[in-house]
Length: 119
Image 1 (cartoon, rainbow, N blue to C red):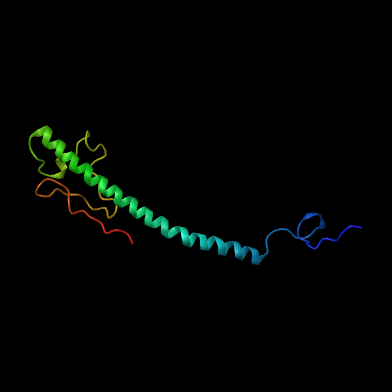
Image 2: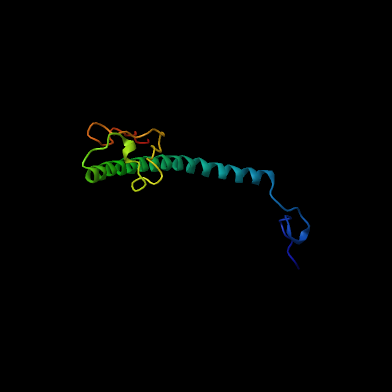
């Protein structure tokens, strides 16, 4: 004697297949919760990466100013003097955080270009 099945969804019994509206709502809710947990972290890490690139750019420009002095026995008059193919093949970089240009101070260094830490 065969036991009757309690489920009539799909299979050989000719029942309906697919997801009910309630099941679909649960899937969308779970995906929304996961996205709400992941997206803020991704935004924080993007800003943090841009700040690290900014610090690297400042170091590169300062090193280029030092190389300029060693090669020419004079300090660069402007940051444009550092824009050579050997030192910056793609041009002097701009700050990736706010897009501002870097500038040299009185001692021919880039300083004071700080960004607040992300919360």
